[in-house]
Length: 268
Image (cartoon, rainbow, N blue to C red; front, top):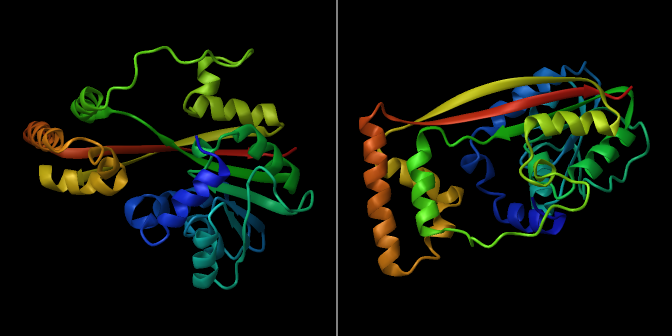
């Protein structure tokens, strides 16, 4: 989870490559808006809009879209691409909109990176009209057949074995750890939303061979952690990565099992 300032810095840097790196956001954005099912003319708030996956889908249905993001560069590019959109750089936990201003609020792959998702859900609840809809997508993290890669990274980048601080009083490890789909549904209910629904989607991604898997992972965080190793350890990590990927390739092929959940709820 990150603060608004951290998110702004990260996504400002990714503005030119965001949907190339996170290739699935366009498809999931379309699916999320279809799941929300707004009628033409609906006032839609796209929270954490990025390069506009949700915005494009909502515009395609004839909605009036207001898009916000922590990254000023993301919003500037989105409005440049879609001048009909009202865009603003804004902290999702402090929405500068009137109560009941929107019919639908959607957030594609946003809630899992927030430092306080409950606060954002509370603000979204406020700016939705009674009967308005919230629609969220949440990435489902699963090791799957990449268990060998997890083991390799743990060996080379093992975290400290010292016990971390206990969760704050009254909070469980589940509440302070990575956001799960069950916890997100619970947060929606706790915030006052009703009729919570959930839909799971899967999008397997085939990769041609071990070097292609390496190249695919590099801009998705691998380059950053690999670069922290001494030169000899970098070479060893790369060699062992290719060996592990080759075993995976020989055992049924290299396929990344990407999955997500879509969440929909209504403000009473």
